Length: 123
Image (cartoon, rainbow, N blue to C red; front, side):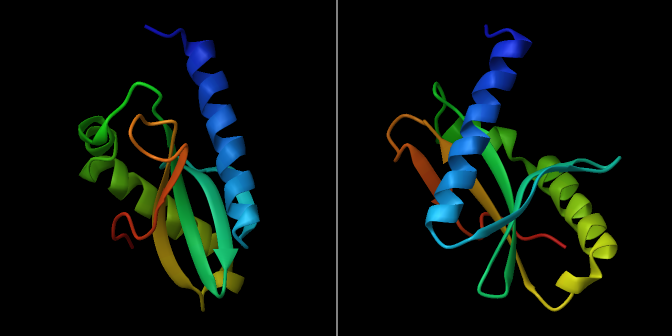
């Protein structure tokens, strides 16, 4: 099993790769690791009047079943509630379309950075 420090390093590397991926695909990264008491959003990005809340999962030993498990309804609700706080604190984004994406990094059988748009409904 990986030590906590190793998991943080792997997670940070995955988030860095995702931020680069999003930028290369025309997104502006607005925030990284935006936190409240309710939770954290890994990346908040914007493109074409769409505000995207991105959950990053680095799963070098993962599969689709593990991904579904780590992104269960409880996790989705926490992300959604945190997104509500972001919007409440940043009213300039009130007119944006909201989307919840997941980007999976290094999961066997998928591209090294796999972007799932509209991965779940929130708000």
